[in-house]
Image (cartoon, one colour):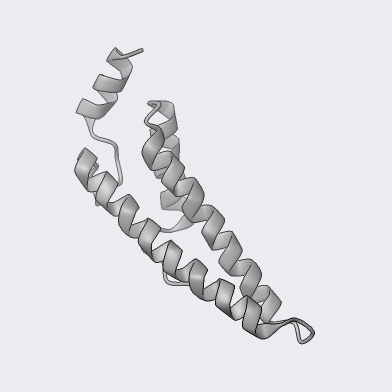
Length: 102
């Protein structure tokens, strides 16, 4: 599967977002993880000789398309919110705003 973000990076984004109760990036990372799992399951099914290859190939194809779009969405969200795209750190202003709201 083509990926822009590693599993570790998704976890890093999700952890920061959850600490500061910024749910949107966290929700997207959860769905990206779920689509990766779906894609992997379909690949495993394709490797079994007694499965319907056309069904699993089609699901795998859709999972890849959905994954690509969700990663693009995550990138857009992070950029719109001002995250550091090199370190994937949440911006301080957003942390402060979220903490001030508590």
